[in-house]
Image (cartoon, rainbow, N blue to C red; front, side, top):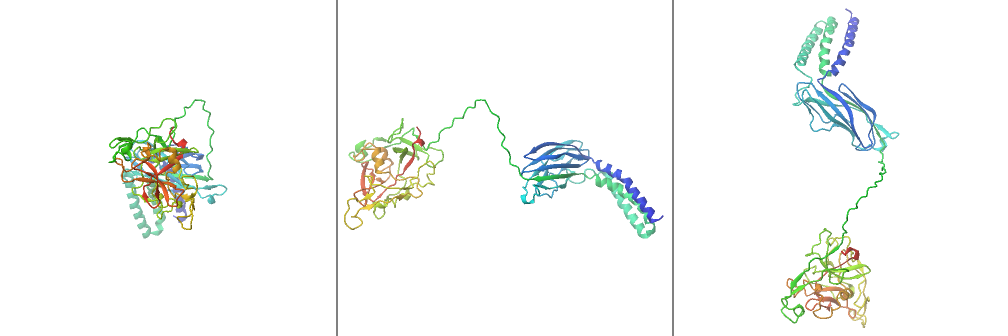
Length: 495
């Protein structure tokens, strides 16, 4: 037999095997039985309906924005002798689109069908410079493997298939040996070998189950989501009741203590009597008045603590209310000015006032830079001073900055507006002396600084003096305590 005739016969046999190969491809024991669209997210769209043939899936989709996705219901039937398990991701090389099986349980029991969710998701936005005429193709052919649950074999492989492979191996070795011994007879053995070899190999290879996904994806310029007009709703909607947020709420209880002075004719001993109770402030009713007790959320935590956030109303000026804290803020007594200059401002003690970090409520009006004035409202200290020395001549009081402070000191004008008895010993404005010496639990401080310098002196400043509860003049280099005053809009006080 001539070689040419033999090759023609071989070619003819290969052509005869094509139908068998096509049949083998769809003769899988694990097979897709249904593919249908479940959901489109974002602006994703199908350019053509999805389809499948045997175990080959074809998608043709278009995506615009990151997180656009198309989800399909994929039904798989398992007629093999074992439970099979799907991988949850395809072997995609795309850096923009991810293909996966969304379900957690990826097992199809033998003899049953199961539906999974197959998704294609646009996971990484394409750089606009890669788009040509506003689009880019990201086509992929990817596979997803399916094995038995224990991953020991192809679900389409059985004992017959294994036997065929052994026969192929033996026949192949036999034919190779014959070819070596008698090359002139090679074509005869090849005519025998080809059908014996190709048929079982074709059966085994083409029935090996893998999901094959041919995805044609067009990625286009991002779209902005249009705001759809809402339909008019004629139903009456009740507006929720919104509680107003105040800086300061009215107190419902009052602080009290016992007069602990040892002298019945001195301080609270004279006013209320040693051992007698003292109640500080009043419960607010109607418009605020001096001495009304408020609890102010100065630290902005939403809590109005009557023990640590108690303040007393003083006065209002241009719809700005001032309130004084119920106790001293700093544990030690400090100078107003360490070298005794009242016209230079409270340089030595203002840093012991609460900072804006400690009292952080944004509705507090921070003092910032302000003009300090004397008790007469002037800006000249030692106004009648004569001579050439610092302490004997008059001085202009410069504006003072309470850097990073949420509060300031009490002024003479506020104190007198709140309590006109402040030059009378044992006056009734006890709320200005809470937690001072002479009161049970009052501590050591005998007074606290005002902001106000004395107009007739270059060295003296006013204080509230605890033993008598009056305003007194003290040297700026003396040491007294620090009591904060806050300012808020009157609208931020509970009515």
